Length: 95
Figure 1 (cartoon, rainbow, N blue to C red):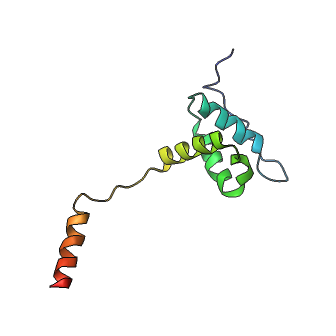
Figure 2: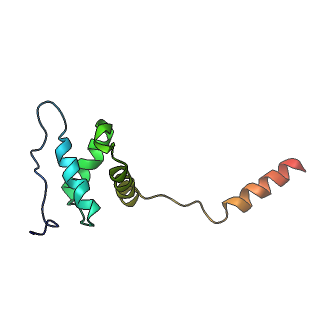
Figure 3: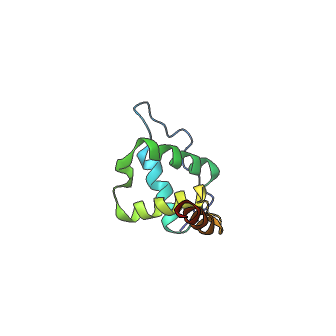
């Protein structure tokens, strides 16, 4: 079996009628087996997510997609002092 980790999906995958769902499936299949997508594929799948929800109808692929998006978009944590600051302001307002 030929390794696909260096494989890039076709950059000309945009068909005249819209986004290429097969390209998304290929990228998601690569993610399922632990392969990292190229930067171009990462950009494509993020852009495609805005346009095509049917690509993500499989629960497994939804979970992979959510993991991919979380990894690439990240989440900012609240500052450790936030709860103390809010509590202090509430106590001032109630006094």
